[in-house]
Amino acid sequence: MKNNSEDRITPPELYFGRRKFMQAAIAAGSIVATAGTYRLFNPTSTPMAESAPLQNLGSTELSDAERLQRGFLVDEERTDERSILTYNNFYEFTTNKERVAAAAMNFQTDEWTLEVGGLVQQPKSFSLAELQAISPLEERVYRMRCVEAWSMVIPWNGFPLSRLLEIVQPTSEARYLAFETLFDPQRMPGQKTDVLDWPYVEGLRLDEAMHPLSILAMGIYGKQLPPQDGAPVRLVVPWKYGFKGIKSIVKMTLTSMEPPTSWNRFAPNEYGFYANVNPTVAHPRWSQATEQRIGESGRRKTLLFNGYEEQVASLYNGMDLRVHF
Ligand SMILES: Nc1nc2c(c(=O)[nH]1)N[C@H]1C(S)=C(S)[C@@H](COP(=O)(O)O)O[C@H]1N2
Ligand SMILES: [Mo]
Image (tube, rainbow, N blue to C red; front, side, top):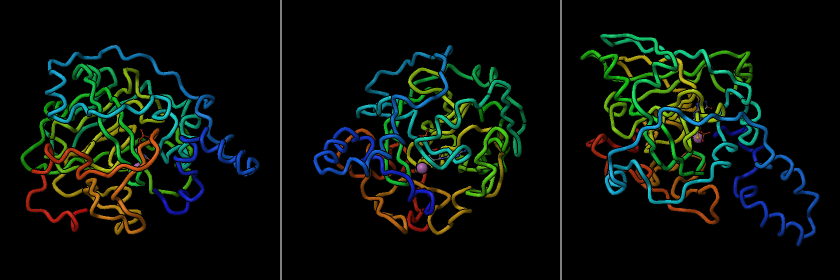
């Protein structure tokens, strides 16, 4: 999503349609020009961390019809696991999407703590075991739409963010929730560069954070979240652009004022605080009307609120979505 680094990155339609692309290239006699691309992205050989199966998967009492209606399940083909694990944005490791998995493979998260404080009655530092004990992990199959106009369908395992907030009990003054990623340049070498101000920060309005679709994810496809996707715990808010889904969270703070967010700080005219998916509000440098679903050929129409309009539109009643983009 960053101007200078994105230019170096091969567009996904090239390597996800690699076989076709290679055939076309061979036919055109230009194999030499494509060899580099092929070497760069070969998902079957990308070294990455092995993820253990999750122990505390919960069975949902809801029928599939109810899950569909609530937006917990989407009636579209799931993106294959390999693509989800090998095509990532995580600038703490590298700005090259195809290299994040390898760059993050030795990232250790065993002694993790998540500190929750600010305007709460019960501030608490959660160990990983305590986080996992909050709730059995439900499966949520959500669309994921990056602001760069590619998308996936990801089966997350997680629990509603509201469950954690109920434990710490926000005070009546709390109106926003601020998030912070780990800052540790030894473990996250991308933090030795200045592509962004570190640590990565994000925020939600408290009613957005309390919405049943907002989850803290600890797994994908029934296995522990791998480092490249934000281990050990990351935010998922499916009606917003992917960059709101802050990874590897160490701190959450309830506040009365709108907290700063990394991409808004970086380019306030390009990335708003709300970042709700909206096909009618173009990014200043590209349209948001359509998207490339990873693994598909051709483009899909982008849906208002990423297809979750029925569930979330009421959060924004009376707001001008062009002003609060
Ligand atoms: N800490 C942190 N969180 C982050 C990012 C990042 O660079 N650092 N990238 C964001 C962006 S732009 C996207 S699209 C998603 C990508 O999530 P995925 O790699 O699991 O698909 O993570 C988001 N969360
Ligand atoms: Mo993104």
